[in-house]
Length: 321
Image 1 (cartoon, rainbow, N blue to C red):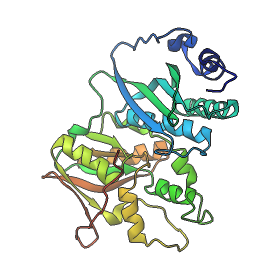
Image 2: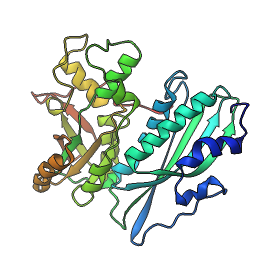
Image 3: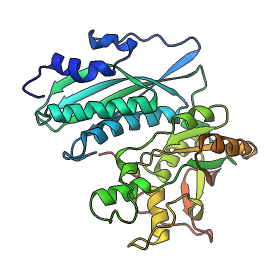
Image 4: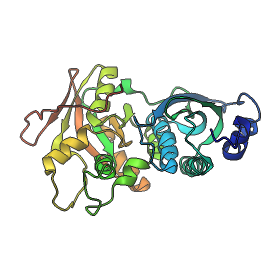
């Protein structure tokens, strides 16, 4: 941490202003949580590390935003309303006051966007790379959490938003694609978890997951938990439209959109008899909802083209090492 600040000064200056009443002003060693009557607590935890999940010279605002967004996205996939989070901060010693100020600003704006606030955490100095962790807590009506295990044969499979924007944004950030095509870097650095959609799906969906590792991989998690299979139609995937010509065919873009992680959209299943609900939901949220496949007997996820032929996939999604 900066030599000008000790741990308590760092917390007081940058993080105490972000805390809510549950965090007790970050003056205690613990938070005090009292969930509303009839609500279940939903908890999730994600960690990110420098040079693994982000680069050292990335904007600290973006690092903070994405750190919180990936956790809130997990809550959204459970139909939970974000409530509070705990922050784990392993500082490498390279983070100065300016870096910390920018990081705290990113957390502040993400909190406001997602409806969540800081309740506590811990900071340490480490000889290793910068490492960050969030434990996020959400609320859902008792017994109503959306699980991966509820998919049923015949369910329609839907995804929210547009897939593949984060994949293009990452390539642009790495200078592998020109930004004059259209700048997709915001989709990669500052994803927007589908908080409202997740809560609206609670009475409708049989199963749900967020698309963090890639559509095929995350749908595979639903299928494994539900002991079912799935077929996904390549030509039905909602992908980026009207791109100028560049070194990626539409088919390759569709495959990339099916397999790349970091979209943080939702993939969910519901009975076909309830699909009409989605028209109103899509209109109310101003969010595209697209049917991309169906749940079938079996245990595998198949990606097929318009002729019904299997589309070979080299990598189904991101793998944690």
